[in-house]
Image (cartoon, rainbow, N blue to C red):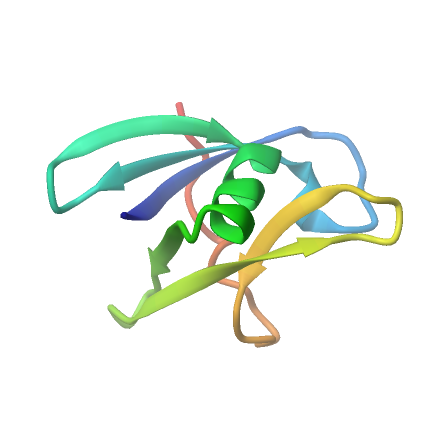
Length: 96
């Protein structure tokens, strides 16, 4: 199953790693039109351990998949697979 991340919920604190500031992701399974909200560590584990796929659509309409990562302090997070200077995941709108 693949889900498209449509917005993010962020903590407003200061973080060395901006991905760790993301608390939750709102997503949609476009194939069956189901929406949901999942926290950062669960989406990490789903991608890493259950072969889940999560992606975003960038400003040019390209599908960019997310990959699991762990920061040196042990926090699980996801990021885009490319290491571009701007990460479109961080540019997603905030969820209401």
